[in-house]
Length: 88
Image (cartoon, rainbow, N blue to C red; front, side):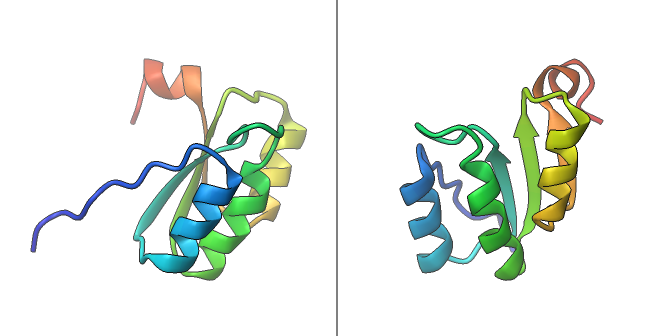
């Protein structure tokens, strides 16, 4: 088998619509998705519930944000700068 397509969502509505209408294996979700801060926290539980491996990718470095993200059920939490410096 090959690889599937990549879907980009620019805001909360687009992300929710994509998750409800398509099947995904992996989701990288920015906490600051779209207009409202922390919209990614609203999207992550939907992805997790649908069985999607969910990774939060954000510039938020506070432990509280990391805890909130993991409470949504996400499997990974990447801080953008650290991820860009060493993506392993």
